[in-house]
Length: 286
Image (spheres, rainbow, N blue to C red):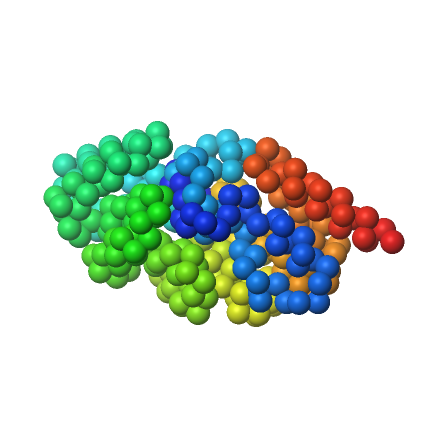
């Protein structure tokens, strides 16, 4: 999101505060929101150092991820407790040890050391898909987007059935505003892991929003909310507010902005969201 432990950036320039200014313009204009770059921030676009961990919005208590092997991976997918894949059983203990050291360093925001350890993990066991995905996460956190894409591609090459590899690639495609590719990759992840795949639905919703497929974007955003029991993606509420704004549904906008503030009242952009909410509610009362 289990609030996993993510990495810090995933595209430096575009947003250190979830793009609420763009949202403000969007809510009251007839221009379709998807025609502008109004993506609602992390995990798609942020270079903030504290975004090296999945609970980066900071308001929710940590939740233990059932699969400890992926507890520091941004794109972890909830599994039944005790579930272990055949691929996991093949990973040598020494490679797992390096992976867990990388996780620890990532949580402490020691990106260089995390990269060093996770590179050792894939050197020991090149078929270690989770380690390749984590390397992509760490590299993206350091704004090395091309290298991150290569690492995530290695993850899918190591295990074509590993859904987080496609989510990693979807995030990078979204950073590059390649919405058709983002949607394709999100769909591939959902085909592999249709249950509790909140990032698959989130990336799909973002892509469809930008492709002006608003009903589909709304549907995937709502699926994200329904499955996101540990509130790993509160920013989906901002996305849904944008979708409602594009549909000129100000009441829907206000509901989603309130839900976002309830989930993360101390988020960096909370004051901007409160200001926007007050303006929306003033508009509704007229």
